[in-house]
Image 1 (cartoon, rainbow, N blue to C red):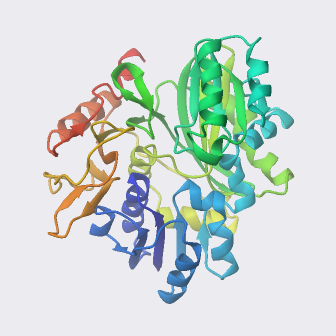
Image 2 (image 1 turned 90 degrees about the vertical axis):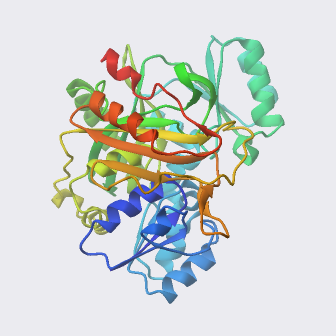
Length: 423
């Protein structure tokens, strides 16, 4: 079987690493990929939003299966284009990927089908939003409606911050067209937990839980990023939380999408907040999380191709989804200055000092330069993942492994998984 993966980050490297383990796969391609993915797959210099070129490439190479990793092409309808050309593809169609593509849609869906979430209001007019915020309770959360690389969320402590936030999102368009519409949401407190799931349109199978760290600096300080590290499983995702979410969130979401004529096949990412009043849905994503995939997929026992094909064919109920009884921690090595301004093009050393059983070096922002050296090419550069018998051991292993890597402006948080000590 020949497989094409669409995307270029650490998530896609984690997917490619899992695909490589399948005895059913003879050749892996990735468009556009990165330097790390290039070690195990043939890279195609095609952007993830160049749909016509991707379809043409898949036909030319006689690709048997396409796995779309990134949010933008899913929301833009790449799956529809590939399926129309007769190419088997894993991921939600455009009308289902709106679950992530529009926060207003997902909030309205949850309200309509009684899926527990924070109270909210949606605004198209910045003046109306400001009027609403005059009498709101604080803190409060502002969310750009569309895709914003995980950064379109502002937590505002008071009215002054909120007014500035409306200007930033809706008038200055800091997040581009994602800010044409805005959701104003009740601020919730509690532990955050990420839960990934496979879905075949009617059946949902839950993967191991995880917890991301979005803020750039230690102690959850600094700006929101695409994720500075993660761990799996979450000790805060208890049996009681699991039972509640299975009853009121997971299947309810799949059934709601089907009832709306938006059958969802692919991966649903549930961002949960464990509030004093019980679990609430913070957000949905329509694909593997990044960097959650980097700690969840290495622990999955199943052949990923078997699971992916079961989702496509509607046979997921026949899959016994299993995960190793251990733990994994991922620490992101970033370029100092991320997520704002940073330099790139620095040579990375120490990349050969990893195996694919207990330690993983997932590339995110890397490329090969003209001299054939692997250099930094983004804000998030590498995801150093390690397994352990438990979370504390995995955390110690991951941080020890970060010492193997060096590049000029290497930066990382030093407290990924620190919450484990409080569990």
